[in-house]
Image (cartoon, rainbow, N blue to C red; front, side):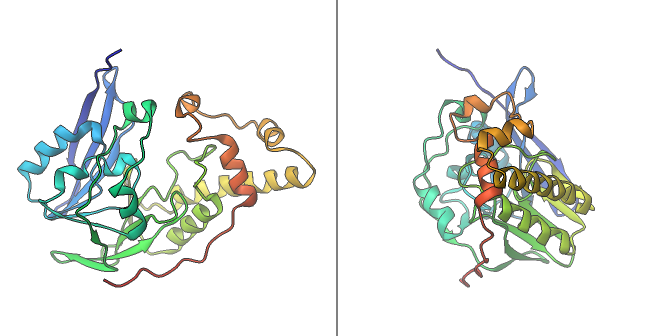
Amino acid sequence: MCIIRTAMIEVEPFNEHITCIKTATEQDGSAIMFVYAFLVGDALFDVGCANAIDEVREFADRNEINHVYVSHSHEDHVGCLKIFEGRATIYANELTQKVLRAPPQYGEFFNYVWGQPEAVSDLSPIPNRFSIGDLDFEVIPVPGHTMEMIGFYEPERKWFFSADAVPLPSKKKIAMPDENIPQMVATMEKLVAMDIDILFDSHRGPIESPQKHIQTRIDYIKEIQHKALELHQSGKSIEDIQQILELEGPWYLELTKSRFGIDFFIKSVLFDKIVVEQPLTDS
């Protein structure tokens, strides 16, 4: 069966420095889920999903883009990188580069939702700091969703580009096997403590005064963790805990072919530990 995908792109100027580029696959006239890239001066923070590669190429042809900064290697954020190979400097940290050079095959469901990225080899190490015009950014580790994920902080304007550091739903119930949920909470606690006026989230876009938004997610996960630990210590199994806490996944969970699971979420809140962050290497 031939599946015809229709891609969507929406370009929304946010202020004099930042333009939001939203890409998605269209289904029944609506986006399945938008992912944001951000154009800041002549630089892109992430690049959108592969199913919108033609639309992103047209956008790139109309705009001067000389630098691309990659937050992490997931396909919804790097699907259009191939466009920029040879026409812009692409920056990523070492672990992200490893995946970009040989991306996994994500399978039918994720190919439908986001598309399959092509391998990219012309990559540069990401610096600890960089400037775009009069904006000065710090590269900040934001592990949890992936352990190598980074965000970009402009301290003078109090902007933080957080990638997927903050879960999309306020009540996160599923995870991938390599997600570390306690680490995710620690990262969110770090963000709450920082001086941030606008959080640029990769699926919700700009969020002003984001502390309450982030704290809601911290509180929910900690409550689930407390209850799950009590049940585990009383001898309950992972399946028992899921049933007792009435944790139900989204409609598409089975379609992910075990890339996501409620059991991964429960196991992580029970057993994963917070890792001491290592400083980025100067380059």
